[in-house]
Amino acid sequence: MSEKILIADDSPTIVEMLKFFLEKEGYVTVVAKDGIEAIEQAYRELPDLMLLDVLMPKMNGYQVCRLLKGDENISYIPVIMLTSQDQPKDKFWGLQTGADEYIIKDFESDELFNSIIRVLEKSKKQREKKPIEAPQTTIDNILYRLNGLLDKKLFQTTILNELNSIARTQDNCEDVIKEILKLLNRVVNYHLGAVLIEQNEIMNMMLYENQPVSEIFITESITNITKEGITKAGFSIRKDNLKITTVKSTATRTKGNYPERAKSILTIPLRAHKSIIGILYLASSYENAFSAEIIELLDIITNEASIVINNAMFYDEFKLLAITDGLTKCYNHRHFQEILENEFQRAKRYKLTFSLLIGDIDNFKKINDTYGHQVGDVVLKGIGSLLKRVVRDIDVIARYGGEEFTVIMPETDAKGAAGTAERIRQAIGEYIFSGLPPKTYVTMSIGVGTYPDLKVADKFEFIEKIDKALYQAKREGKNRVCLAE
Image 1 (cartoon, helix red, strand yellow):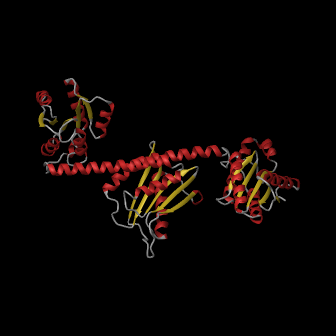
Image 2 (cartoon, rainbow, N blue to C red):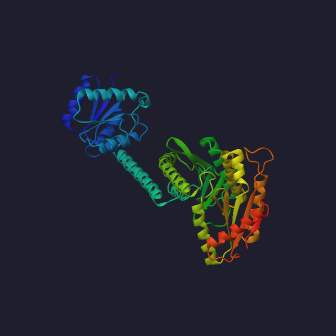
Image 3 (cartoon, rainbow, N blue to C red):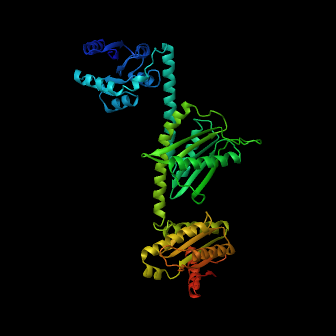
């Protein structure tokens, strides 16, 4: 059976020339002289291929192609666009609308036939979806569907423009994710949304409560998101590496019972550069909340959102590298000085209390000389990790230099600071560092000071007094805490 080819072109000369060449080669031809007729003929004749002119009356070729590919009844029809427009943007747009190939009208007959043979061969499987009977349609229905399609594309473009705006205006990953979750409520009526990503060995889960829900709803969602992160993204998620941030929308909260169970759940992997970088999770208390149309739109949005989030992650990482010690992953000396200055001025202005400790590893040179610098690096990294486990999230840990570490403790008095310093000293003294012989322990001497207990004019005098307390701890036998006076 010969393949049927629909020729859609408003030029009688082009139509007659194409009919002559195609019928000579054994193809059956059908003709349409404008865009509306092209769609009507596509429904009526169910052709195996369409040769589609771009510039036609009533509806241009781009619109015809997009409408064609948007209806599952006739989306099987492959399209070769024929046009006199030879600019790269024209070809790009033609292929974006769904055309299989794009040929300039000054073609040779061999070029056209080779293209037809190639496209028909490639489309064999998709043409198996060709309906047995022609679906019914009218001009009004075609125009209605075209307007709906244009509205849909306009909506998608608006949302994508909003995503680009988020990328331009937000300067950290957490804010980017929060704004994306807020944006998604324009697309779908969800109760709880979340994004899970991995940053600097920490699993960051941002929960966005779009509509009020119960604690049970939130707890079960966290469990679901964690499972999806493990199974779909291959993340290693533990209690000690999971950080959960919850944001509530500004929606009015009335008294009453909030939903306790999610009846609709949607999980979409976030992909960038062919890798899964995270998980998008949406949950609703309504049944069948996520239609096929919504899922299709969310897939388009998450493709762009994944790139925006990935870029924000790289930017965060770049900023962190500038302020972080590469070995211990604690803040570096320069950033410590900046934070200490800010904390000192804040405490001075608002009459607040804060403390600072400076710790020095005892006999560290001996560790390096006896066991090598690689073991020394293991000790430094291990102490950096221990400090992060012992102190609060709001405390600031820095590698002050060499084997010295500092901890800035906002709104902490002398008693609290001394207690923290003692816990650090004990944790280090009990820790077994790999590379060291059995029963070989590392200790630390620590100096501690509190402002405004210490009467100092600036941060430099503050550090100097705490340094003196540290040296006193060394003189008194090491492995101890001394308070600055």
